Amino acid sequence: MVRTAWRTTERTAPDEMIQATDTAKQQGLQKDLRALAANIRADAEGRYDSAEPGRRAGVEWTLLWIENTTAQLT
Image (cartoon, rainbow, N blue to C red; front, side, top):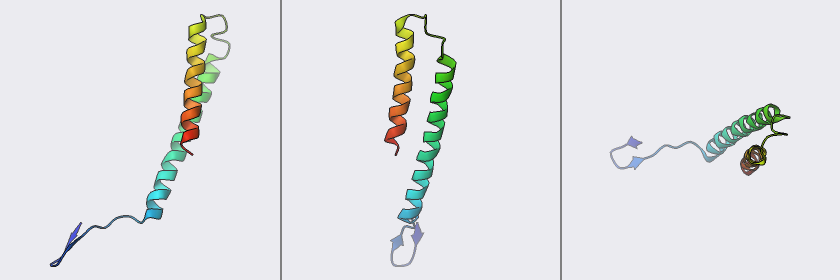
């Protein structure tokens, strides 16, 4: 905020800059979420085939949630 003798004005970043920053943050988060899903999928592969159904369903739900969250960022 800049004070002058007559008025107070606020200086803000241009809308394009704010949008570009938000887009970059969303893309970074998408990349991180996709990497997390890939790691979970790789770790769970074959591990829960003989486990109780609840565990496998939990892993599948988690992966679906991550995928849906990632898709909503675009």
